[in-house]
Amino acid sequence: MSEPEDSAADSADADLAHELRLSLISGVGPRIRRALLERFGSPEAVLAAAPSQLRDVPGVGVKLAEKIVAAQREIDAQGQLALCRQHEIAVLREASADYPRALSEIHDPPSVLFVRGQLKPADGLAIAIVGTRHATSYGLRQAERLAGSLSRAGLTIISGLARGIDAAAHRGALAAGGRTLAVLASGVLCIYPPEHGQLADQVLAQGALVSEAPPRASPHGGTFPQRNRIISGMSLGVIVVEAGDRSGALITARHAMEQGREVFAVPGRVDDRTSRGCHRLIRDGAKLVETADDVLEELGPLVAAVPRDDGQVIHHPAELLLNELEQQVLAAIRSDATSIDEVVEDTGLPVPQVLSTISVLEMRRLIRRLSGTTVLRL
Image 1: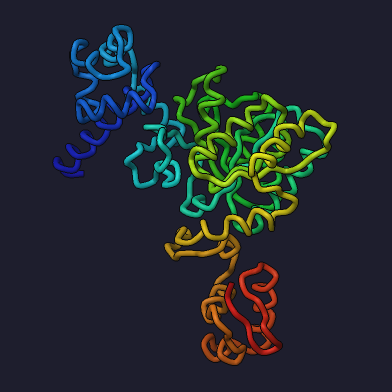
Image 2: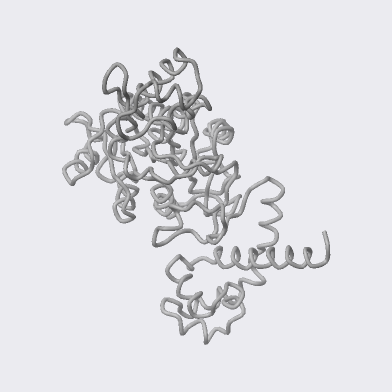
């Protein structure tokens, strides 16, 4: 690496360290961070400011100003970055190209995101499935069934790795061979609950662990509701499967509503306390969910313009699952009546191959037959 390149890399590392240090100061949440950056221009300038200057910012009192001034010597940002490099943990700033686009659009996005595993462009098509830790066998079955069906339709499943419904959602996606992301209230090297260590490893193989907490941070009461805004923020919508009156899943649903996400709820038994939260959501306007089709129909308009890993734009989750031949046939079918003869001519494929592929596309609800000889793209 040449000297200018070395200098640019050092500058980028220093900027990231300042950003990380500011994000790790207790009491500097998204609102105060935004006010500090508006006042001083950069994390480095915030950390170098005098206490009297800091106290001019709304929300910053004497104690918080002292914490910010002390951060340079008390918070080892370089040590955290070294730990991340050692364990192949990506540190994404809000301005990073790899930062989840949907999350960047909420009003209080994390300034720094720790990612263990891999985020992909296709994860822009994600649905969250959350619910009570004290799930019934019915709730576990529904969470696993919905996660599997939506995975097979091309959606990434997001949840919180918690006991009960969350774990069932991750397992349903894994069993279907789909992608799943776990958003943690702890650091990505501190799996909670501890018995989900193996499940976390399986999630890593087919997705990623995500947190705004530093890698070895332990969870505490306040971090669980705080991480719920990330679960909903990374998703097109949230499905609640079993939730009592005071379930944390209802906090996720509330975040989803505030963020303009779709909210879905699975109905349960009227005499079961774990159904009360879901039934209340349905009464308040959440979409009642019985099958994956209920979710896919509602999300249809939100799917357009999400890129595939190869850079192509897709318009329906199921397109993520198509092989090269199926993509070729789908591309030859228009949104108005298209004859099968035209598809054969455009693709240059044998008639039997086109017909069998059309059957697959029809099964995945990407096209519809108008007659024995014509189809159209949905």
